[in-house]
Image (cartoon, rainbow, N blue to C red; front, top):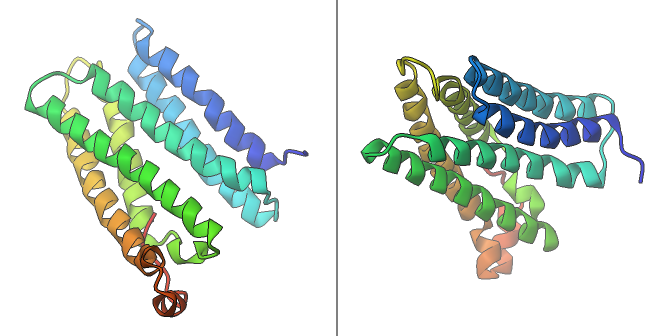
Length: 204
């Protein structure tokens, strides 16, 4: 199997995850900034590999499989780090619940996409504006939280928390859109399936 450039970038993104974890816990000044920069680099490769795949027509079955896996791993690992290091109290509970919602939704939607692909109805669960907005809000929240996790002042930390809660709400919203689009297929209603194949989903 020959691996093309976009897929190499996706693999690089996966390899950046343990680097981010190690940097996150290293006791040196600026560890928070370094961890945030590693995360930003990983997020940039997410955009770049997709751009190159479309621009140069370098798509592959392995790349199509690996790219969403790398995305979910990047978000899940970062959320676990942040929840583990978050101070206690109701804010810690809110962070844990929000992270659980985001990770749970990602797992559920990935399973739904796989099932829809198996029945030949993958086109009904396309990414649209709502999904892109959710992703952008989620990434911004994670960068802010990484940057502030061991800062002397947490002035921006609460902004990151608020952005993550908004991302959690958008996560549920887009997940429900996925479910709505897939519902005719889940019910096994062939007539509804034929009608819904003409529509797209606002998910992501």
